[in-house]
Image 1 (tube, helix red, strand yellow):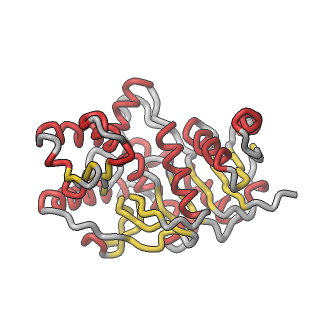
Image 2 (image 1 turned 45 degrees about the vertical axis):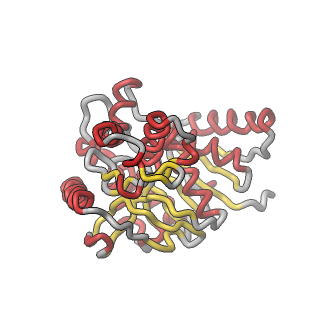
Image 3 (image 1 turned 180 degrees about the vertical axis):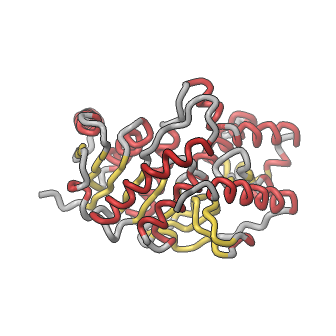
Length: 309
């Protein structure tokens, strides 16, 4: 019997399978991939396990259509839900995905009562509220992946614009996961040098705009949502928790007064460790950034108000 710890990924679509694949390669935990579609999680698990022979990791990915195999998971990543199709707003997704996320959360909370839940399903901020309400878990153990992806997009565009290594680009994207996200340009640097010293304001504005619409750009090109970067971003959060790395990462966390926002899931920098969210960090924002964050919070509240729970 394997004695490794366990991570469950719910939803064996592109995002879930990518997350499972990245985690399998990390080689510190067993991975359970769950999906309602028969054969899908089993087939993807088999494929990822066979990749272990090529890349040299010890494969133990289990594909399942029920939640028995997930019992006792340390972390559960929820990617289940319908993706956004072209022309569909995030709000259109709310009611459909609320039912799916509610059902999944009930099942994982019953089989893994001590787990930490990472929500990836869209509309992200609203689905975090669903998972928290349904599970009854403390806010430290229910949060979402969005800011890492949004930040990765901004970092990519900055690296291209400056011709610098992506490893030296430090950026923070806060707020809701949608057009209202807030790129904190005042805290964005390349090798410690403020971005405003390197790139003209209009070019920065164009990168910020492209980041905010980053998900839509991929949908337009592919006809479906992105999966490589979102899957890897969720896996990075799992790493920080399972390995107790205490990484400071932008995540969608439940705020109770931080940044002047009360009772709402929003993207903010948090310290992620074995307990889940161990600290929420407050970045100094300039006045336009503060105003943009307040607008983002209002937009998120609008989406959350559509929820039935």
